[in-house]
Image (cartoon, rainbow, N blue to C red):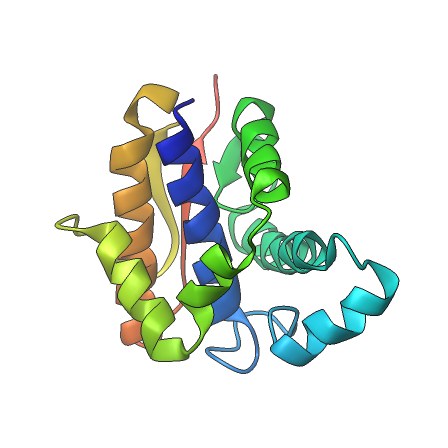
Length: 169
């Protein structure tokens, strides 16, 4: 997978994770991406506090997505196939400057703007689980835009959307 695509996926996960937290839209009850949480985690994980935040918010979001979509032969932003997850985690671990991701979530408005930028001209709306097709790493750029669009529409429309991929048959 191209590094640029992996980076966009990481930013998308980070931004949606932030917007879904209780202090923003309250889709999941966590508050892991709060600056005070990072300070607390730095005592326990001095070198990997940002990674711990990322993993924790991803787990909180995955739980809610799994409840809405179900677990089986489907994938979503917070639970992707291993061939995507591995480079995604490597990207987060190798990005020594966590401010790259943190700058996208300085405010709710900035996070929404980043999400809109990722959506580009894609338009996907709906409520609840939204099937966006079979997962295909050759179309990830298009999928990222569709996923971002679905979340933008949901956050702006005060509804919950859970875009997902069908796994292999």
